[in-house]
Image 1: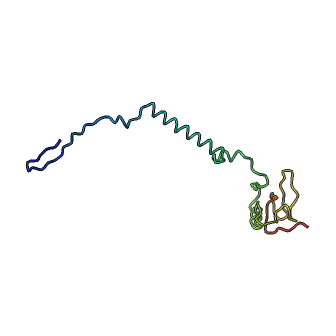
Image 2: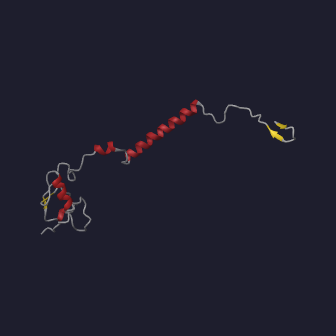
Image 3: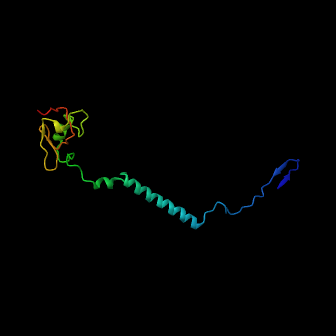
Amino acid sequence: MNGKASDGVTFLTSTKSYRPMESNSVSRKDFFKQFGLMGLGAVGAGAILTACGGGGSESKSEAAPDPCTDVSGLDENALAMRKNLEYVEASTVTGQNCANCQLVKAADAKGCYGCLLFAGPVTAEGWCKNWVAKA
């Protein structure tokens, strides 16, 4: 509604009526449909991540540790010796690995090798800086 002040200036007055927001409201039925679809999406995403190996710590703890890389039973000195010799489980030097090293011990019942220089298991693909070609 328009009005005029005593000095002739026109001003606007609000006649806005308030209606329920029918076009923006969500019915209870629609709400539960959308909520249910979001829940199904979350469950589906979790299943896909688990199947692809990204499922969290519980899937990783189920796998048995590789006995040829398990050094949990070694003391600090044995671990330090491995580190000083720069032992790695997978060689980056072409043609040099524990399987063709003179210092490697025969594989045990688990299929893990040993080394004459330090304690603990080594992998056939492993390497250390004291590698010596088999004679």
